[in-house]
Amino acid sequence: MIQTIAKEFLQKMYGDVNSKFNFSIGWLEWFKERHGIKSYRRFGKSGSIVIENIEDALHQIRAKLENFDLKNMYNMDKIGLFYRLQVDHSLATKQLEGRKKDKERLTAVVCCNGDGANKVPLWVISKFANPRCFKHVNIDNLNCHYRAKPTKKHR
Image (cartoon, rainbow, N blue to C red; front, side, top):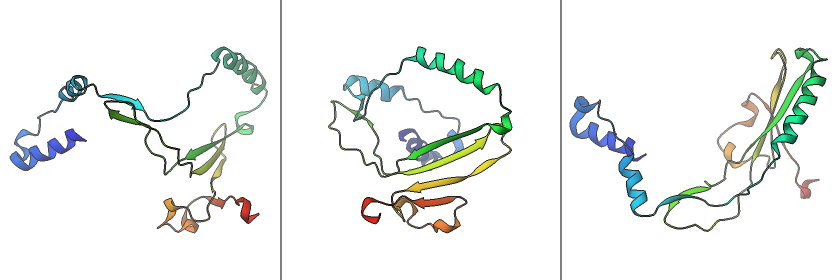
């Protein structure tokens, strides 16, 4: 961001004369080191998985899948979009206090068969009938299926 602003100032001051001028990030790295500024994670969970268990299971799954054609195999996955989530890293001279994560999100569900011939239409699911991220969007005009998950008080 600083480099972009510096390039804009250079253009305003001198025009296109210095268009080949490059800005390095070395001065920023030295500044951070001199003042003890590091990147800290604000909040989050750490976890671990046993890679050996996954590798064993993959061999078994691949052996079972050899009995099917690609057109008959489907893969479905969900994607969580936390559209109000704050960044979890910051430059600072000391560890920063964390805050509770805002877990308001949209869930998108995508599905397709193995050869790509049958793409199931996209589904978007939210807790709210009209989430803030769609404030100025007509949900009926989206090229997907949209559903609001009923909350406990609406059941």
